[in-house]
Length: 474
View 1 (tube, rainbow, N blue to C red):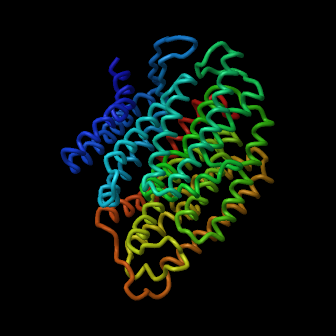
View 2: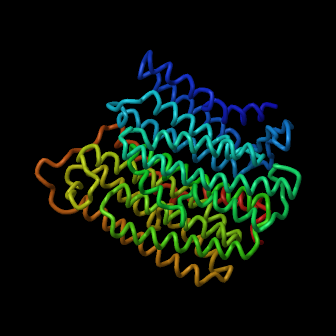
């Protein structure tokens, strides 16, 4: 019973606590900020407390039958706990960064409420064991991210928030149709092992790809860069776009079957998406759009590992989720410091910032190394495992396409670093950001490095998760 309370607390402490934040904001902004952090830290601590239980082989299940196949059903296994810990930990760091970044903007009460509600929705989603319950939390993330993307309320920004909402909502409706087909075929909305129809798989994949901003649904993500930088870090690098890859693993590796035809189709889609977005990143001049295109490209690599589907590639894809979350959140938060202090995101108008922002520059470089896959950073080991798994399964043609994408990653990130940080400092160049914001980006950069140095711990956990997934090719 105690473990069930831990599971429910990890979900509903942030979900319920988010409603209190606007009220606290009317009393004290500092109290509101600390309470928001406390809610996220509580969820993180409870998620971490579940790790020893799942490592011992225990699966915490809560199941209360309701009506028409919709059950109040949650499950904490190794895969869910892994995603919950990553999401809550990164959310806590990003929220702390927000204290200084958001401090001079309006709508702060809504901002903190939406951030905490988003984290609670994510926790509910990863622990859901019922398809309808999963869909409810899926839509809660859509609503909160819609409000956060349109945070500045300017007409053009709100339109881009609407675009993100409509594209992901369209995919969500198709996914719901797939869930209904599963109910017609199995008589249940529970996430059980079994075989489902090709049409249901197609509809579910549309929902997954739309949320993950994968071709042909990718256009909303670069446009969502109008949001504040902590929002782009939270939603579009660390957590939101990872929802799709998590749900893919939950449905097609932990539950229902995924035929070889669909594996090949997903590999081709992911490869094209990775290459197209890498090409876009090479020619764009908006710093946050470039990082957003990079996210689309790297999500393709995660799908690459999951679609190959053997133990090595799947472990690498799960490791990729962690390492990409750390480093890409760092890049977006570095971009926030640059934008706030230089008043521009145009990389052609920047330069020489290494002289005036050395700590931010070093953090950006370290995070870039991890995204590129440069050893000994954590991203290297994730990419190495994905490519090794592809080679073992004989997917050499697809692996070659992704190798081109990996080379493109090196090119566009070095291009950004060179134009933004190298060269002579311009007259009146901006100084470093606030100490709190700089500490957070440095911490993410260090974690990106330590993730590689102590790779045995994180890789060991992803291998443990992989061993528990029935849909992994043995």
